[in-house]
Image 1: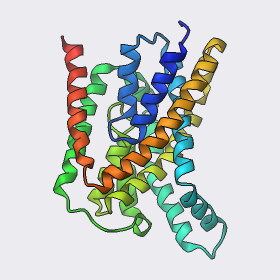
Image 2: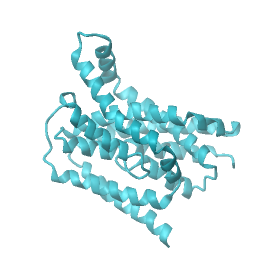
Image 3: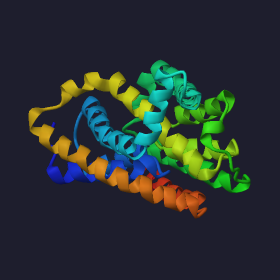
Length: 267
């Protein structure tokens, strides 16, 4: 494996931070960026690098939604906070599909991770998912008022996002809107769902960290810091975009980038 430069690591971290929460698929953009930057490494190292960058975005969402998390923890520890306990169960139900799908089809998804063509195709699919939200009348429900069947639907959308190119945030926010959630509340539930999803993927793939070479350690840490900073800013920006009703406009970007990726592989 060639040594990963600080520039490439920070750039990959910034891309991860920007695209993890924006509805444009972080996995697809990392696949594209690794190809464009000529990051040469075996598949296990790329998976491990991706996990390290995801840790940065995990910290960003924890920091922003720490009050929600504190409420959920208190609800699970105290019978006097049924609302917090209910929200905790919603997160559990929404996480189960990704656990089942990720665990049973783990090798299949890992093989697709470095495939630019499939990432481009699935990114175009993400565009249609985002565009479909225009056809739904936005509800006003708070995510805390969800019932388990609705949480399960959002969880199924998250499970589909294991495919590179299917945006996790895009599909889960869209599913929340389909369930008549207020768009901002759909985004909040999506971000909270990302916490166990990212943490679970880290645990599942933690063994790949043995493929790190010591000379790439500092560069990878720099990339993780970049993913945290950019991820934090991206969450704040997306919440503003959603409040203005421009969420579906990301579909155009997905179609353009996905289409270009497909063309580069065909021609």
